Length: 140
Image 1 (cartoon, helix red, strand yellow):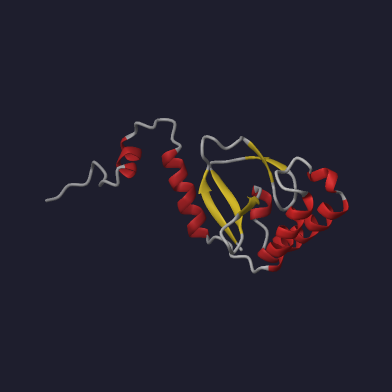
Image 2 (cartoon, one colour):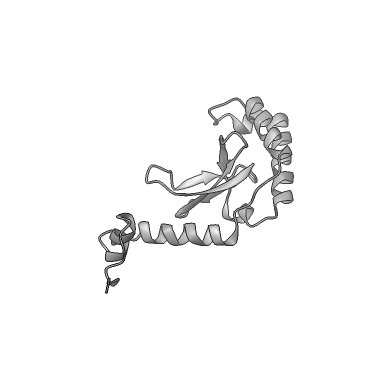
């Protein structure tokens, strides 16, 4: 399992529920997605949980599995049944967790700032989006 960093799309709701702790959080410019070994997205991780060590995240996921099985009524809002979700989450909790590196997080945040800049017509954003050299670059 891994944590995959993705830009927040405009279709993404402003509030999401953390797959680990279950808390609702406001989505920033970058989403932290928990993805299993088959590249299936299991859910989002909140800013608090993404800062935890991998073993602690796996432990919290295991606790969520027990909660889903003991109190399935709390998870009726999901598309899949609580039992199906619990099984998937249990399998994920058993896998090793690959955390994004500091440089991956930093680059994704930087990209997000550039692409989510309110001034989408800025010279820098256009240069990056078009994969061109910055306007101050000269070939001599």
